[in-house]
Image (cartoon, rainbow, N blue to C red):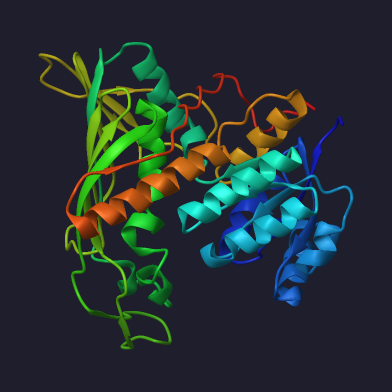
Length: 366
């Protein structure tokens, strides 16, 4: 086929606005439909963004011009929606995480391979200018031999500002599964696949209290660890220490420090597409700021890059294999925290090659 890739979005919740704003502006994709279990909500989104079709999942999947489905449903629904899309002969790009269990993730990859279809997955922040430029700098030898990393996301927890935060403290969430994909994807981008992990995890409080909105003052149970510290060893020999916490009065977001034999690099926040890069060379007494080159447009870059790769017949970067390896790594971290021992990560994947510096989401290339 040729021309823009026909896309449908399933899930018209809050995050869909960020995706639809960008996807409807990219010349190389054509958003043809929006589906949601709340059909009126899908219709409202379709009207807002000028999308010609809306309805339930079955109706959108029946559209023969839809080639790629963007799955923005809640994590618990990722597998069922992705499976339905694959059965309908559609490629699938999903929000993070790919799945909540290893077996389900592997099953999706197997189904797609058997059908000759592709799976892509968020996060796609690593395709933004900040992290792409960081990757290029490391590959250029700017820090010498990459040796280690220190990454951290610490906060007192989202219940202070989120009006319905309960799901963030339930199975499939917590800081490891909600925030971890951004940091782990970035580390795999920089160092390659993970070999094994060791972790300690804890639950800071048995209950939390909603701090804002109509449910302010409501108590709810915490079901998952709210602090995880992970030691990660990579196949290529590097190591990293990663802290993910909802138990810290001190907020620390987007801390990624990569140490090499000749310099240390501070990368931008893995949850953003832009940001400042800083380098401190061996013997220097100050940090130097470096420019970032690339796209900063936001959510949907992974969908667009996948669509272009589909037309070109080349691998896409925000791949199912990468997303599955991150799921496998998070599962291993969780198991290590429970068992108190190193856990080997069975899967592997390659580090996605950097995009060309002139890669332009707003260009019509198909």
